[in-house]
Length: 264
Image 1 (tube, rainbow, N blue to C red):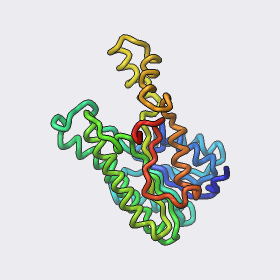
Image 2 (tube, rainbow, N blue to C red):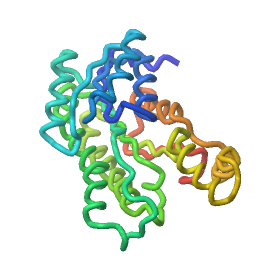
Image 3 (cartoon, helix red, strand yellow):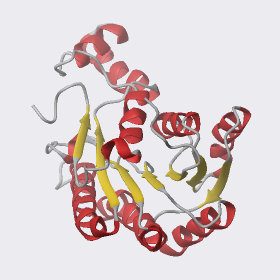
Image 4 (cartoon, rainbow, N blue to C red):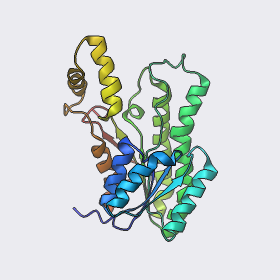
């Protein structure tokens, strides 16, 4: 299917690795012009070079998304580079916060840090692109959250709270920007296969149970209806769906990409 994204200007936050890199590759393959946003521009350069080698237009805009003025500067880079348009914003940048701590054990500083990044950061980027999208009467905003923002999770209070908050940001902006032909949606990945899953989650389970990491991965997959762990390309494809006009009549929606867990 032709998603008709050729020439669309897409800002992607957190593009350097994992899901962010997968999204960057998929959007480049669809012919999007890319503005890759993040604090560590050196970490972004390899994926930028990779997609440029494949023929994509890609620029890097340094930005700390918790800083509203930095977000406005990144949007200015996008506008100045690609003729004033911004068609798509994909918010992937975020953090995990404390793991294994109860709410009582989580410090105020730890809680504030992850909420600032996962909620405030997305608010700043959406707020920065909104005037351009309103003026052009078109836009697609995709917020990448997590399934712990759809179900509570003991030991992950700060992270779960931040992703629930991001859903609220998504739904409120969907109502406010909808009259301007701007869609705002939420993609909720489950556990995504990659270094963190293999080297931490599976390795820790294997050590605790005296099994191999491969056996641990198989046990983890049994939590999901489809009996498999999400790949970063699955998340990227969900983002493409929301960024294209295939989803023209969908806004304020939560899409769990987890093999069947959060919604069941």
